Image 1: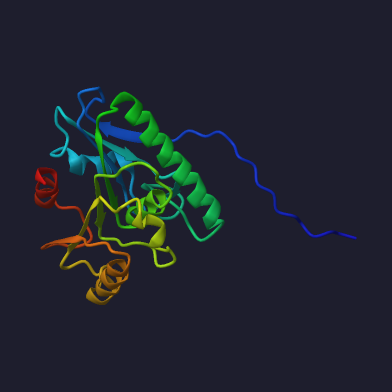
Image 2: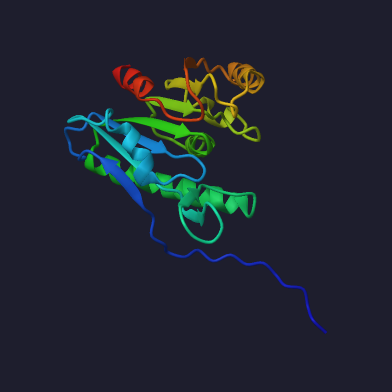
Length: 217
């Protein structure tokens, strides 16, 4: 007689990839950690930030741990931070991964202030990451994305109390509806968070002019 299969987990070492603009040092004043959206790769995503990096500013783009073919069984490859399958384990894995990225970078640039940007799926990713943070975050930029609906904002209220919070989205972005945005703003207002809003003429994409505006503060 066959018995039912049981589910087990096993933590294994694996290789993560990240791309960096600039060199980390004791003179680095600003560290940007930028997380890409669904189906993107870090080596292409980071190109948008070439105007952000300078002698005092380093940009690091971690790449999500799970990759897949975007169409069929060959061709272009993209990455995703998580899916609905074993989602809690995937969240724990990428939080541990991003913690390691930050710790490694800050060891080389201990005086740097931390700026975090999440684009689309990467926005939800960085929100869940910062929910467990016990270190300062100078700036959080949610670009074409919002706090996850299932996330209790009380978990980030303390972390983001002194953080500059900015929402950015294109006015032609069909994935960011005015209704969803207003619901999000009302929700975060209850948590005492007051974000800046930046819009631009564009779709679900990054915008070089807005990135320069963000860099200039």
